[in-house]
Image (tube, rainbow, N blue to C red; front, side):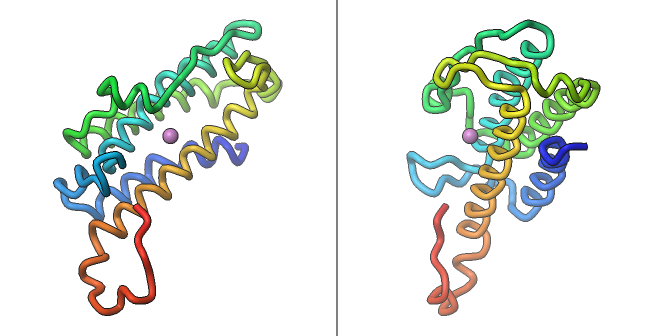
Length: 169
Ligand code: NI
């Protein structure tokens, strides 16, 4: 299995373990009005999974050089696609959606990694580039979830030992 697929496969278990650290209401905590909660991050990942990994990659496997739809996370957030209501349900929705993507992605042949699509901003891209981006994106949001957990679960309890660190959620 390639590094991209190994990473994409690991993400659900990593997120499950991280989410377990927090109490249910902490999954809804926002570091600031304009920053996302863990629940919103999880809903963002599911939305991206459906519209980007699911939609774009599937079209690349089934069509010649498909045009990708534009995807604007800020717009999706404002449209309410990342609602902040139930972190555990959001986690399960992501894990199910990722599992479905992997089940057909892992059936693709190595030659399929060279298939092309047309990105609305950067133009022609290969499937392997999209998968590298998806793995990179997973790790970015795993880092974001870790930062939120540091702030919401452990920062207050550190007391005077806070002097050695800062939080960046
Ligand atoms: Ni993102």
